Length: 256
Ligand code: SF4
Image 1 (cartoon, rainbow, N blue to C red):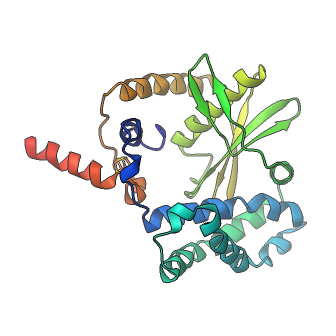
Image 2: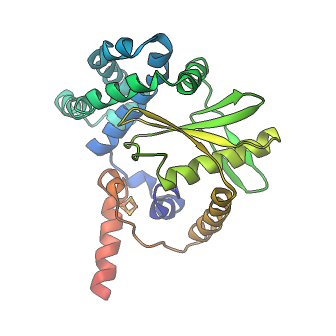
Image 3: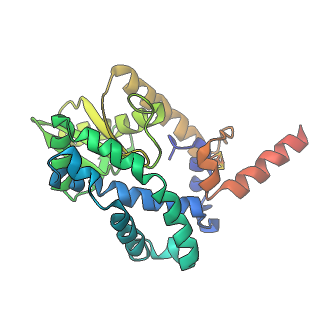
């Protein structure tokens, strides 16, 4: 949560979750997350670029939207079928790009191998570190060549190369957690970008670990009551705290 927005952490530590309502962009985020969970299976059962390009992504999306009310009954309960259709239509507009990018990645043996491993595991491991006093649940923790690779799904588009900096730190925190749990050094992680269909593997450096330690220190201060500055981003649109956050921001600006 700290890596997505420090203020979100502040509000949630103060028990504000009960006030949230679910916005269409939040539901879109859930749809994208569920869609991304299909990518590995799709790469596993496809043997060529053409196989991916001929897959019926529309049906896949319809199935995901159908299942959403079973997986997230509370979140979806306030949405009419018409509203859900609108959300599905939005996600449908990303499908050609997703399909194209997935079809290109099937040519990379490393990505295909990782997709195989992801699709044959259904475990979201709970990781806990006593040393760092943090916990986390990556989407998957893959066992490869005597080590591990934590995998997470982000519902944004991938940057042109590599991963976004916050995602790098987020996956580094999973690496540090998994290292303590399994007692071996872990050198890499993987981010799946739902909106663009990219699988991005990254190597973890000492500086990433240092940044995570700093972030943990800052997160502790926030939990103790220090309100961080508002950091406007695309996330604000679908944020359950946006009303509260905007009120606070405008009160502060009035006082100034
Ligand atoms: S509205 Fe934006 S800045 Fe405020 S808590 Fe939500 S994501 Fe963070």
